[in-house]
Image (tube, rainbow, N blue to C red; front, side):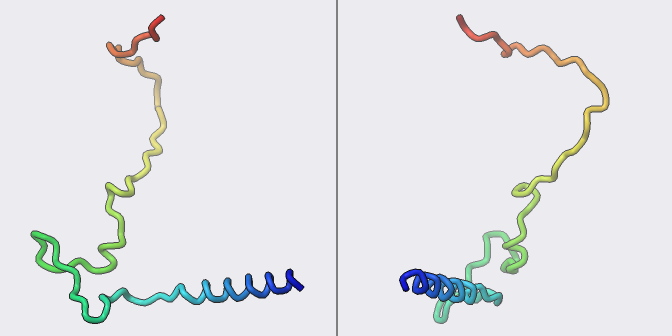
Length: 83
């Protein structure tokens, strides 16, 4: 009896959590002003502009392979451990 109740509660919780993922444009709360325009901008950024990461946040991956062996330059700070 207790396992049936737990299963029923689990199904109900899953259904409730699944229903809260609606896709709508974000709007300010009623009675609240819209966000301020950033300093130096001529217009407010769109939702798409705010949610798209820039190149610094997601740098491009470099898959360049080493084509030939090269001698490493001497490193004055590459010292053996003390002792």
